[in-house]
Length: 427
Image (cartoon, rainbow, N blue to C red; front, side, top):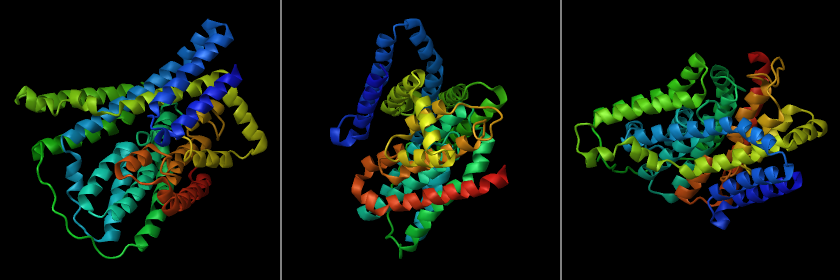
């Protein structure tokens, strides 16, 4: 049974990594591997009550992550359809190449912490099309957006789905993950930025911007402030109530829903429908949510049958040093999606109170949040932000590998070194 489940998981995983050559959306093989693995477990185990118990044990955690992501995506879409992000991007006036790159990277870094790295990458890619005419220039800037978005998402509990998973599982807390990882994450972004910016000379020609808006200045500002505040409120809600994070996210979504309905209540139905949260819901990336379900379901089977625990024991016996193991997991996240890697690590190493490595805010979980969040930048297909940018700008895999993989690796190792040096001091 275990062998069949592992084979199904690996075949499904291979199909996910070959999404672009196969031209099959990664959600399809993820759903297949997740459900088929559970089906094999049920058919071969014999005790259906035990299998049902295991599924019910994992299901609340999986559903909580999916609800959280759905709520966050919808709020971001509400801001976007109200042109809220254009308030930020319209402030960028410099045409100096090096300065513009620095502004884009810093803006991406902090936006991804407040929104998430995938959404920020999409927003910044749209901005780059307005700022830069040259395709070659956009490729360079877009590649740095990938590195900056992943670095920015790693230190925030709502910035990257892997950090969100660790936060939901109480492996890390909001305050500590920000304090411990913001400096390593900045280093991860700044080192490649410094190298690339030094090679950029001169200025870009001025571009005339499209000044047509669908909303009034007051509407744009109100929705932007309310939306970002709602997202920032979610960790506060969890700290105060101790309820699951998706409850806070749904509370924020309900607030944004009511606010926007009242904002457009005087307009005709056709006009208000363009800004409705129902319209925003239709625009969220539902395929990604289904992908996460399939992957999380598949990994939970491997936990239930003991495979992940066996792998953890093997790594401890052969490598031993957990810092090295986490570095390897981070590097693997550039090849294999970081969501199942982090989910697997959570299942491999149980949360252990009193253990400085495995307790809440322990070294392993903090370092894992950094490595899994930033390691995906080493390949263009290694993160959701990279895949999005790859699709929008048509970045070739080997072009990125040749030009930016080594830069992402240098930044990744530099940030990791800073965290490891800071750890004895900060703790």
